[in-house]
Length: 358
Image 1 (cartoon, rainbow, N blue to C red):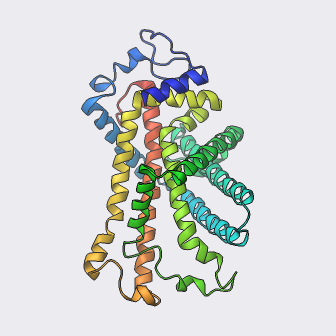
Image 2: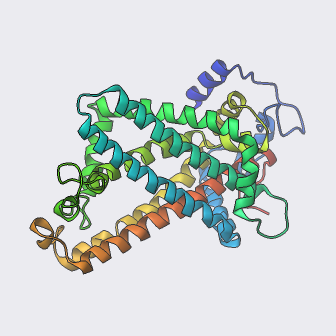
Image 3: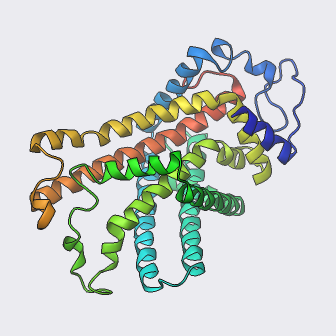
């Protein structure tokens, strides 16, 4: 992380300045070396890092509990990714028709990712503005979204950068035969083995009027769904690695170049806390995911026999839908908590206070 930060700082022209006594911020709004040494538990190492990371996650949960308006972020982000899933299904459908085309599907895929990321970054900007609002009580989440319109140009540019980086990483992972390929295979294998398997029974969705007896819904589930999961995983990683870009754009009025430089510099100071917070929230989501083991244990096998050759029962479909809603609901709520925690860590880097402290 340190080496990456130094390279980014050199490329972006970010010069390190000598620490000044009693000055918390440099010209980029980042905590100086001397000020950072005054943080609880002596900076960024050891048990203090773990405590601050957990503290930021817990503080995010408390903030969300006090301001339920922020749940709009989780709902709208979920709808955006649902649209992304349908979009990937349509791309599979188009790819089936245009089997010989290579450039057009790639352009359409990039356009879909760019549109999705623009919506997500715009929602994140609204979240930041809502949390940082000085109004008494809980401000409307849509007031934050309205305020985010002022930063439309920067949001568009940052969404383009994320979409390009995501496409590049996707190509690297796709053509890699090393760790990432094995991880992807394990991830896919896990998803296709638990009771509500992604390949439930294609005949459930296939016999609807459409191309060759196959509708867009057939391509959406499971192929579009799998692409959406891969998209989400890659860009979640990018969001974590650049966790403070949007706060710099919104709160510090920085351009993209300075916001990226500031984010790297802040990550250099608080990367441990960000990692601990992300791992904790990920563990919560994974714990909910593992509840499928209870269903498996109750049924006695991974895939009930009636799912192999015939349409699943209505009860099984209903149980699967409830499971998916619960799993993704928790995932999007934890993503909201993560956005709040990132702003908490951003503020703590400026003030030197422990995340979550009063």
